[in-house]
Image 1 (cartoon, rainbow, N blue to C red):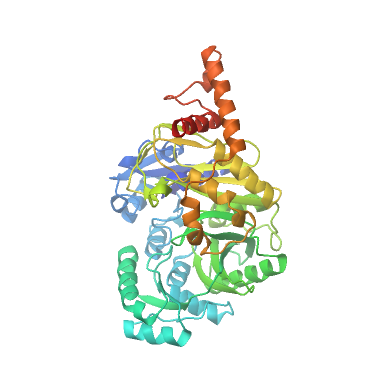
Image 2 (cartoon, rainbow, N blue to C red):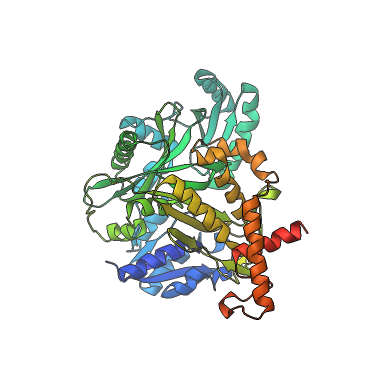
Length: 504
């Protein structure tokens, strides 16, 4: 095992990797921008190196500065987390050339899977089903019109070099193609420095289901089952769960086998995720392979008992996977991405200082967060503050547990997606598992409308607030529950206080 690992990231994923290192007895080195000098990940690591100003282009995207920091600190390896430089083939190669270990797939595998068109070609060649579409990029808008007419509208224009919904446009008719073509190319160039596009047939009503795999340096591959990631807004995931309500054991094996074929064909090593569209008729289609740890990896960890981040480190250090055969899920896990966005204002980013934070606890609750009281949330980085994850013996219990955990969560100082998540998990269609990748966009108007008051919850909140007020008046509030900036310290009482202000 390594002696020292540098974590080339920030926020919750950097803290997650630091904790994995601590449990393995490995020293950790954090890097931070000037804005993150006092962030939790920088404080919890054994060492920290400042690498530049707040803008990521001057800090977390500076591969040369990160490698220099690793060399100066005497690190053996670099873990890139997700985002930033995690899927940059040139950075993986530079780390290797510097005599350091890259905790991720080989640069050649990143290159083979980094281009969507190249990945589609690889999938087709190894009997992995793909959405009907082009396996080469398209040169002109006229060619795009002609190809779309062959497949039949609607179609998707997609960036060959990207993901996350950037450079993607739905085109319903030939008349929409020129504007969509220009917008997709422009967005793709801005996001990835490459404006090449390809076309896929638009599948109506599919789910987004992905398969987590591990592969070691000894040729062993393992599927850890699926994650359901269909609750998306503008192609950005908001809620994930494992397993999927739409996948049975037979389909899980078929998808897992297809993911392993794609990974093996690319010479893959370490943790990776194959993303699929799952059509209503049960057909599934390869979309892409993410050559890094995923944001939503905790739901797989909770239903399999496998620490994916620790196994990233173990595999990079040369260990052999000890598991026999595919791993079947145990129970159900759900993750909500808690972001500093204001859903009521079109999900505009919210900035400010975290004045108060109450993190949920209790049975089956996990909090992967990169914030604390006093943290400053700015516009330099992604708005995700934390991930709230729960486990239950079945989906019904997991949904109920998530509701309880969201009710306990209090974040003051910035707007957050907490209440929006409460509304989503209360939705009858979500509770029934009747979702697809267009579901949230269809439901947004009703979810963002004023929700009817939950009388039982309201009554309980008011009762809790009255008890808290009585205790304060009598001087019997314990120091651990003392008000902070006028807050009770209780999520129930805080909710009641906000209700009272809203409905005097």
